[in-house]
Structure formats: C-alpha cells, structure tokens
Length: 342
Ligand SMILES: *Cc1c(COP(=O)(O)O)cnc(C)c1O
Image (cartoon, rainbow, N blue to C red; front, side, top):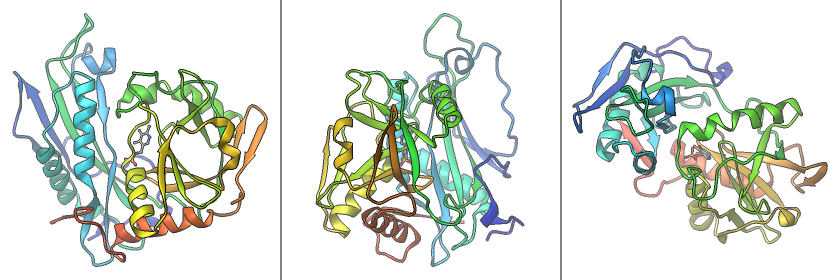
C-alpha cells in the first residue's frame, strides 16, 4: 500500500497522472463492457459534442485508507445515482449504478499504490465523468459517449488547521431557476470561472450565490453547499431546486440528527437573516466542512460569532464525527463506508 514515493502531507490539489484509468464507450445505443486502460490521452473529432456544446457531466469522490488498513470510499452509490440524474437532464445515456461502482472499484484497485496511507490526511480523488464524443454541429445531443474514471492523489485539505474563510455575495448567478444547478454539469463550472476569478482578485476566498429569481435568498458557493447553525445550536440548510445535492451535506444532516441529537431544518434562507446564525460551513467531498468566518455583502460584513480563528463548536463536532465515521473510529450507518478489495 502507498508504494509511491510521495510527500503526502505537502501534496496539493492538482492533477497527477496515475497508472490506470477506466473507459466505457456508448455506441449504437449501448454501453460496451468497459476496460481499465493505460492511455491517459483522448483523441476525438474537432466537432465532438463536448467541445462544441459542452455536453459533459462529472462526479467527485475519494478513496482513502481507513484506520484498519482497508481501502474504502464513502457512499459511492449516491454518486452513481446523482450521475444518472445529471445524465438524464443533459440528454445523455445514464451509466448504470452497479457499473459505476464496479468502475470505481476497478480503477482504485488498479492504482492501489497511489492510495495515501492512513493518517496522512491525503486521499485518492476519484473523478468519474462522461461526455458526448461524435461530431455535433446542429444543436442536439451526441449519439456516442465515453464514460471515464481517473484517480489523482490529493493532499490534506486543511494544512495547519481549518482557518475560517471570507466569502462574498456574488453579483453573478450560478444557476438559473429551472436550469442545471441541481446536476453536476461542467457547464455550471464554466460560467462560474469569471465570478471566482473576480472574487479572488478582490481578496475573497469564495462566492456565495443568491437565488437568481429574486436575489434575496442564499443558495450555495461555486462547489460546496451551505450549512448554518442557528442561535439555538440547531442546523439550518438552505433549500432550493437549483442547489446541487451535496452528498457530504446530506450525510452531515444525518450525523447532526442521529449522532449529535440536533434538529435539522431545510428551508429557504434569506440573505437578510444571515446575521442571526452562529456558525456557517461549506460542505463538499474535498474539505468535508470549511468554516466560514465572514460573509461580505457589498461592503456590509456579516461576521459569525465563531470568528476568524477556528471552526465553531458545532461545525467542529460535525466535522469530527463525519471524518471519524469515514476513517472508521466511529461506527458508520449501514452502507456508508464501501470497501474496495485490492
Ligand atoms: C460537487 C458539488 C458540491 C459538493 O458535493 P459533494 O457530493 O458533497 O462532494 C456542492 N456544490 C456543487 C455546485 C458541486 O458541484
């Protein structure tokens, strides 16, 4: 295990080419049997659907070494289901659930030497994705697709402690009402690039997006769901049809209720009430929860009482419980931790 000579603690979040990847082709109305291959390059038509009209979707999850030495992933069935929903919305052929999980198992096993050791804080990030491959010039769905999965090792998200971040209420919108905000489509990220580059130039770590219909309610950041702790110490999660259903956030809601005995409410959250909350965190696979210290709305600062030095107490408990479940020192709900035999 972890045979590659890598300085895991200092590894960042960047692409590192690993040994093997998985590919399956969709042609003549069906998926082929799929294979683990070595070639990391993709050759396709200059007019491929993905290149012209951005017909592409993806997923993100991680494999890691648990305390008992097993290589595991966290709730991959939910990634499979979410990718099926993404495919339907994008008029792409869904990749079957059991085949998705099989592909992940195969590609992680084929790259087992790249799985970071327990306790390193590093993980093997898994990127399943799918795109339209054949030439498409009149606007329509492609007929030929590739489903692929590669893995790349990534370093610990929080180096030297989880420092709260400052985020900006964006002037741009992330997802239209009744658009594609609820699916994991590359196009949602393409149009967020200008907003994030602008926010970074202004000194912010992230953008928080409002509901585009009324611009009075908060939705999420570019790549993470919002979770709030109210004055009573309970959890509030913003509700909207254009929020991407984060698996981390859904898992944290269960942890809050079942493990910590907190009340969890999912409802519309107005920008004007943000100052009433005690803590704010951003949920996603990479960080689990990143604490937010401050939200800036056009010069008006909303500072959470948890401050800019450390995670708030509830955020910290949630973080420690979920990471404890993932690593195997806290008992996991049935099916959450999925072993990969290598
Ligand atoms: C992937 C993603 C998330 C996080 O989802 P997880 O399943 O928890 O990793 C949140 N928001 C957006 C927009 C995303 O694309």
